Length: 367
Image 1 (tube, rainbow, N blue to C red):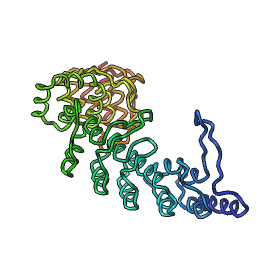
Image 2 (cartoon, rainbow, N blue to C red):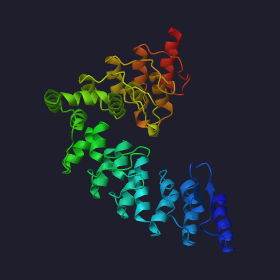
Image 3 (cartoon, rainbow, N blue to C red):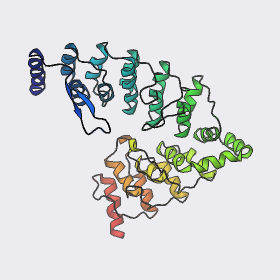
Image 4 (cartoon, rainbow, N blue to C red):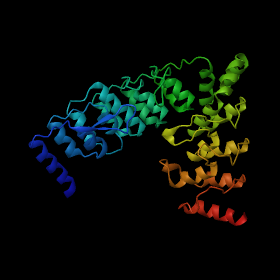
């Protein structure tokens, strides 16, 4: 606390001596164009220091340089963020950026508060997408979709900018929810009166996501080309359904002939999913135990490496000790993979998770 107060006192002295509250430097590591890093970015976006943020705002700092709005929402301590918002200096673009970034952090309370302060959930940000797009891409909890809808979010808005990371170009939140296997989100949209009007293969994908066997059968019988299109996207669809624990949806995709060995070629850096992962890698890493068991039963490759050389077992072990989804940590997937004959090669031991280490030790003895 003394050191924290010291920062504020030192900054006050410098400001009173004539230092600009908008000073900063250009970070040459940002290429091809260096990025300006303001002192306010350091206070609010890096240190998340509420009182230093307040001082700089009071002395004229501009919070709309892009970096401040992008990085301040990173975390669940929202003191600095609230000072920025309550200053009244943020543009609609900056507020929408904060809202979108809070979806990346799964921060329900932060999202709710920003919406209550007037953040527009339908504002297309610099990345061509809304907070609702990012809620779908980041697999947010249903309550986050609910609060966004409560404040007027429109799930039918199409994203733009195909060149950006995690693009939503040409896709609505309805489309993204279907493609990521979020039948629960599609059901919510329908309850709220949002039309589930998808075209082409996305109708079949949505039926799989919602476990609608009748619709799947009807589309497959009347529009066989849609089945072929789903198979062509199989690696991505299987992985994203499995990552969300939609085991029924995974089963439907497999029943349609999607190859269980199909690769998720691009992976997903947000979730640390390597390029060329299989659905089993994704399910194991994201601790989707029922999906792991189904994929094993249906003949998934047990020991195949992902693009970073990690096996499903190595990822299942890591999920127990080094993942954000702590509520799903369990030795269940590890046990299922070991029973299926998974190799211990490349698996960290001891892991630090007692139940998992017991299973690994027992199998090491057998080997």
